Image (cartoon, rainbow, N blue to C red):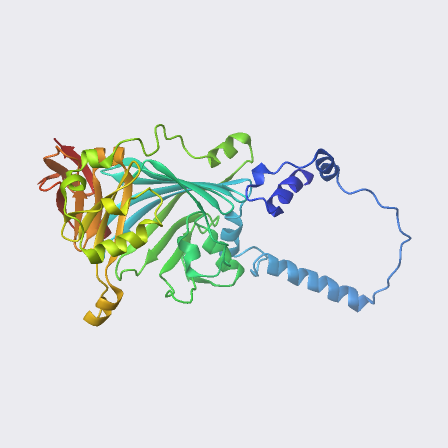
Length: 418
């Protein structure tokens, strides 16, 4: 038991990374030695009437039955067994395959999330499958409120500090990065689980209908099998299948799984965007109302964008040069009355990627029901396909191609043809 005391001290310490905490040798020795013996006290005798002894014994038995789940045979019910099966010990490890289905029941996506968590430290790897081939798209590590993430779309790292944690009572706990059984354990503690039969448990939320978040567990052991999310948009659903959920020993080898994967060569590179994208050299300047919004937002960005370099690529889309990055933004007007649209003015949304990634795969933004893909000079066509579709060739005109369907339909694989 004393071996776990140092871990408890680290977890309670305000240092964001418990692994970074080194206890003084004297304190560590005292913790491992256990409590010092106390001088014995003279015993005091308390006499209970026989009825009192029986009442106390009955209360103890009742408490034990409650602790075991209240089953008539004195065994934990299925919810209690599932709660115990998902208890975190050592390094929690999970792997889930995530399939998305449209309203007609057709599978539209296949992703995998694998994660490891120990105390305040967590590592999650997100993999997408294109035509059954795995592709790591997101590698994420969190220590306390500090995070570092690598994204394949940019092949670079992003460091952030999260806001102070809110209480885990909202719907968003189900959809956060991390241990997918957190919502189940929390709902069990707060009496928000509803037994739907057959090993299925619905989670009660304030703004989500009962039955839209359902955990399926193995009836014999309580081991998690699936998490089914449905209703957004109506008729669609996601099925998360647990292929692994376990507690690993707290060894150095398992702690190493909490580190980010190696990503050789990751970073922005040193290319000049204007060298490779003709629109940045010869394109028209944005209209004044766009430029005003660009000037306001560029200072808040982190990629060294220069608002004066903004140039129109096509209607409602423009490029901006950054420091070894290129950024692509689309312009949209607020929905609603024309008066409201004039009052609020245009808004911008887009992305930035390192030049080396843009040279290899282009850079894309969604525009209504299409995707605009800008490509480097010299590319004459683009081969593209969805994760379930066949390759199609699209000619390049004016430095870009227009692919059918927006980002909500899923991402594209592309091959640039020179």
